[in-house]
Amino acid sequence: MQPLVLYDIVSKLPGNNWSSNPAKPRFVLSYKDLPFVTLWVEYSDIPIAMKAIGAKPNKRPDGSDVYTVPVLSDPNTGALITDSLEIASYLDKTYPEKLVLPNNSEPLIRAFDFAHSCLLRPAIKFIFARCTEILSPASAEFFTKARSVYVPLPWDVSRDADWELLEKGYNTLYEWYQKTDGKWIMGDTFSHADIIVACDLLWYKRVLEEDEWARVSSWNGGKWAQVLADVEKECKLA
Ligand SMILES: N[C@@H](CCC(=O)N[C@@H](CS)C(=O)NCC(=O)O)C(=O)O
Image (cartoon, rainbow, N blue to C red; front, side):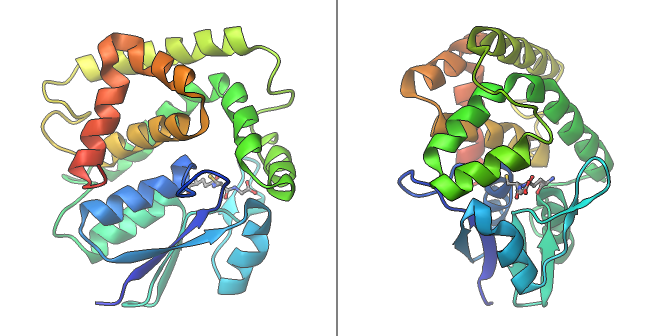
């Protein structure tokens, strides 16, 4: 089997990885024991690089086209897939030995993805601000322009209020977890919903200062550091 190719975003951090969306297919590929290589793209080069390989654009909320990463290329089938959820769906259909969207859960996991993002997006201005510090100047500028479409500027003016909002969001997520018997969102069944939660946590861990990550980790009895550790272990990334 030829290794699959995952397009991810380069950064100044050791080991590069930082962004939650490309982290999701990395977790899925590793969970499924599929061989893959990562190609690192500058944030500011995403449109040029993705157009060059013939990737399909994604859609902004207003319906306009935008080239995004992650993109997955599978030389074994010739498939070229844009979007983390489409990639998960493709990988489950093509390599069904271990599923991340089990028991026909894809519609509900798509709804969970949307709900999870709505829950946390209002609080992530200061995390976006921090992202600009780990990117090259050209990419930081591009990132600011691209992301301010979704989260209007300025990003670094209400840290205390944003921290409060983030904690409130995680309190709600904690309540959701309390409704299941196992350690995963779907009880004893591991799924892409857990990967979605973990990859946002990984994003904070990578881009925030150590004491800031310690603050997130301390909420809800240490739940979030535990979820990240559990998902990393399940996906053999720990
Ligand atoms: N729903 C998409 C979102 C992908 C996305 O927004 N990717 C960002 C990087 S994390 C991107 O490529 N943005 C480029 C832009 O907004 O111009 C997914 O899950 O793959």
